[in-house]
Amino acid sequence: MITPATPEAIANAASLIGAGKLVAFPTETVYGLGADATNPDAVAKVFSAKARPSCNPLIVHVASWEMADAVADISGDLRALCEAVWPGPLTVVAPRRPDADIAQDATAGLTTIAVRWPAHPVAQALIEASGTPIVAPSANRSGHVSATRAEHVEADLGDAVAMILATPNDTPACEVGVESTIVAQAENGHLVILRTGAINAALIVQITGRPPGERGDVISATPSAPGQLESHYAPKAAVRLNVTSPEAGDALLAFGSSVPVTGGPIRNLSQTGDLDEAAANLYRDLRELDLSGAKTISVMPIPAIGIGIAINDRLRRAAAPR
Ligand code: TXA
Ligand code: MG
Image (tube, rainbow, N blue to C red):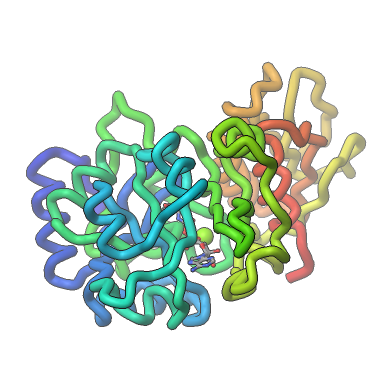
């Protein structure tokens, strides 16, 4: 099931995609659960494997401007941002081209489409070998902690996936560790961040010369994007945030060099207080603490700067009432 991403394995994976099967693959953010975006039956399999509500549209992954422009009308500041960042951890929501060869259910019937050109070489090779855009939600059960290792995908989705591509030992799977930043364009031309990630507001200012607008500016502000509001990224254990004195026996998700003792299991996102390292470790550490069977995972305060904003966003949803 888990197959190292050799050139032969990628060719096989592309044949599976062509045959309407599901293939999980690493990206620089999190693992994706991939299917041929043009094939309605394959897209339906993605929704059922994840138990994902059909109202929650998928991101279409491309590996060239040609592919992106065939499905979406990306213009103005949004295009400038893509030109600066792609390939990379950025998804843009743009008008869907009326003649886009993309299954209707992939975009949940919306007039917009979410497009991303990932940087990970395995993701790019798979899309190129498949010769088709690939829909790929995070490769976890809907609402559960995202997957950043091949083993996480196997644990969550098992037999629903025809193949899980693993990176060769010397290349990291998901270096960023949190999902792509999602950016839309408001009627007034301003860019709006719908989901935080590695690409942040400061970069948007640098590229467009103006700060991002408010969510409310985006009229179609979307399918009230699940994963944007309610409980999401949730482990089995309860999650408590900004804990400085954990209860005895709590599992502890620590950050930095001074860590309280709980008697329970501890994972440290980054002993040196490096937020990039913390993001890369976030989902693995959450999953490992959850496997310990602890009732509560206490999370130490994590600075909300840089990618720390995205880390805090994901943890807030992980802690939200279920
Ligand atoms: O980093 C990522 O983006 C990963 C990797 C695999 O590429 N993918 C990912 O997909 O996070 P997913 O399905 O877990 O999250 C996609 C988010 C959902 O919150 C969905 O509602 C939103 O994108 N979305 C998709 N199409 C949209 C649209 N037209 N308008 C607004 N939001 C949209
Ligand atoms: Mg997800």
